[in-house]
Length: 151
Image: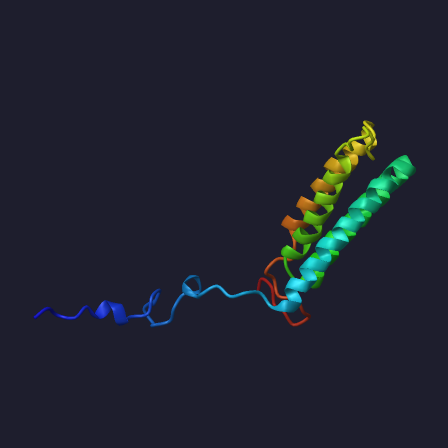
């Protein structure tokens, strides 16, 4: 008669104290409100990208700065509203997709962006702003007046 393998009854990822690690927890779907917020931020990013594409060419130096500041405000606001970096990634993805779609040529040969310096600054500057806002995000420091940092 073979002895029973008792290792199958132990919980996976159990440490010395019998508690399982966070890596061993099953994946769950995010809450519906968080998913809706990210979807809304994605659509808002696409709208800001289209508006910025039109604005940057209308008033060259001021319109470019205004459109990039609007995009940066949306990306940082999304990160602040959701409390994480994904709040900046969702509108950044919407912005990038809409701007790339605006740069493609149509069958008639027309396209929205000209070949000037302003269009390239808008494309590259907007991508840089999106990456900066997504990587900066909110750190893991506690927020509040009673937080004791470094003591």
